[in-house]
Every structure is written in structure tokens, then in C-alpha cells.
Image (cartoon, rainbow, N blue to C red; front, top):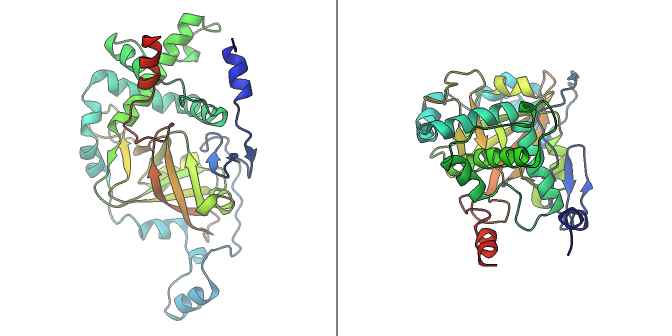
Length: 317
């Protein structure tokens, strides 16, 4: 019988790194290959012209007295997108996500431990696990039914035992499926920002149709200033339409209402299509994307319960 470790080794994706932070799989699809908001670096003030706008468009804008993208500051760009604060709207949109005390704790867990969770989801995607990842539906259900505490590796003074590792997995499974469960269509257009140290625009150049897949949960904010706290020079601008799904976790009843991050999660399985990239006059690299599609790890709709087919097969065996 093939041992699980050997199975993982033999089924690792032969993906190759395209640019730092991104890999391309065997089918030519580009995906985010590790969490993008961390590993801060010093941002260099690079004001050289670097924009997707054509020379003709720039000349027309100049004749009309309109600044080209690279001539605007990041604040000026942001002012042209979200005309008002979306906090109240998003709070109402995701109000149901914070009604259950156990699910409220799940979002708090994510805010504290998103890096480890996202790295797990990304690693599972790299390995092309046939059942997506180990955050299974029934693990989440068991955690909720038992009202178990959400635990993390750092909660243990020594390396966790097998049973403790199972508890960690149930905890993160519950967090993952809580995010999926409460990711609903926004119902209106809005602009969201994600701070990163990775060049999303460069990654999109080598991607099929300019589409970049994210197998992990992306933390965003409708405040560009919040995104700057996590980024290091690269700002991803997501032009979400009313069908885009997400969940706001700093709204009323969340326990972090009014938090400066104003965090909204775009769930794992979202694909982003590149629109354009440019620099700003104050030295930021800005990458504009729209949401192309949103599917879970197995290519089904987001709310399809990952693991149920496997669970049934296991029980029938």
C-alpha cells in the first residue's frame, strides 16, 4: 500500500516559479505560491514612468489636463474609486456571519493566524491533492458540534501530539468553511485593496489570459491606507462587481467593529484577471484586477462541501 507521505511526494505538482511569490503549474496556470502580505521590504521611491497606458492615451489626457496614472499619487487614485466609505454597507452585508459565537471566534482566529492557514492551502494546491486539502467539511462540523476551542500550533509548549494536531486541523477546517459559508455576493460594485510585496502585474504577464489563481484566502480592505500597513510597495486593486463574493470581518457584532483594517476576505479559489499595472508618483506599484471566477479547491462552486464525496466513500468502504 502506498504510504500517504509517499503519495504526497509522488503527486506534487511540477510547478515552476515564474516571479517571486508565484508558480505556474503543468497546465500553464499561474497561482499565488505563498502568502503575499508578509515579508516586508523597504519600499523604494521609484518615480519612473511605467504604465500600461498607451502613448496616445497619455497625450489625450495631457491635452485635456488629466493626469496620467504615473503622475497621480496613490491617494489620488483611491479618491477616483471608492467615493465613500463602505464600512456600514459591508457591516450590514456580513451581519449574519457574526451571529453565531463559535463562528465569530473563527474569524478572530483567522485574523491572528491567516499566514499558517493560507500557506497550508497553497501547499495543498501545489501538491494537487485529489480531494483539495485537509480542511474537510465533517472536520469543521465536528468542531462546531463539540463547540471546541480554536487552537493553533503556538498554543502548545512542545510539538503537538497526533491528537493535538487533529484538533488544530479541526479548528482550521472550521475557520476555512466558516469563511466559505459566509462569503456572499456584495450586491454592488466596490474597490478593494490588498497590500503585497509581490509583483502581481509581472506574474499576470506570464499567465494564461492574464488570470492569476489564488488558492488561499485574501485579506483586503476598502481603505487603501489599511492595505499599506501590510504591503511593501505593491498594491493590488480589486475592482469587485456585485456578484463578487466575500465576507467583511470587522463589521458590527464581530468584536472588531471599527478596526482600522476594515478587513474583507475574498475566499480561497478566486481567480483574478489582470487589467493594468502602473506606478504612482509617490513610488507605489499598483496592479488592477477584476474577479474572473470563484471556485473551491476541486473546481466546484464555493459553497460545494469539499470532502463529502470522500466521506461517503470512506463510510461505505
